[in-house]
Image (cartoon, rainbow, N blue to C red; front, top):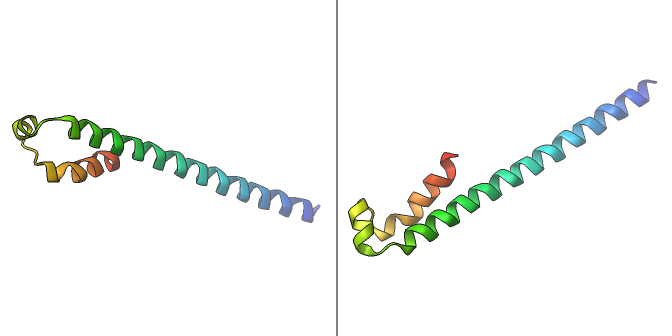
Length: 71
C-alpha cells in the first residue's frame, strides 16, 4: 500500500505542475492579446489625437506593456 500512496502523490504533483503550466500559458496569451490590441488601437490614432492624449508615438510600446502587465 505504501507504494500505491507514493504513486498517487507523484501523479497529483505532475497534474498540479501541468495545470500550473496551462494556467501560465493562458495568462501569457491573455497578456499578449491585451498588448497587441493596445498597440493596434494607439497606432490607429493620428499624431494629433495622440498629442491630445499627451502620448508621443514612441511611448506606444511602453503604454501597451504597462496595460498588459496591469492585469
